[in-house]
Amino acid sequence: MSFTRDQALEVFHRRYPPDTVHWFTIIDTLPDRFRSYQDPTNCWFILFLENPLPMRLGPSRIVVVSKRTGEVFCDGVANDEG
Image 1: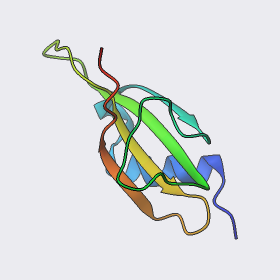
Image 2: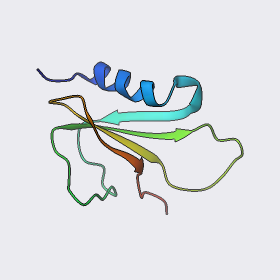
Image 3: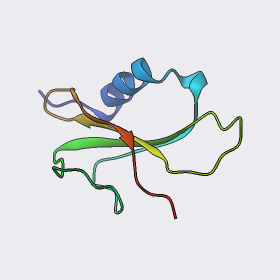
């Protein structure tokens, strides 16, 4: 079974309810600046910003969901600032 985009979003929103997320995008290719000790493959990559108040500068966050199992591979900073 392969987890669909919508199923990956369900996994994401269980961790981060919609009212806590200011912006998000979901892609199925490794983001350019994202670095991990292992480069995940066959995953959904959800880049997002939490509610912006108080306003701050900093990196996006990322949740990486396996397309094969639906498990969260990574939940952390996307290292995309700058």
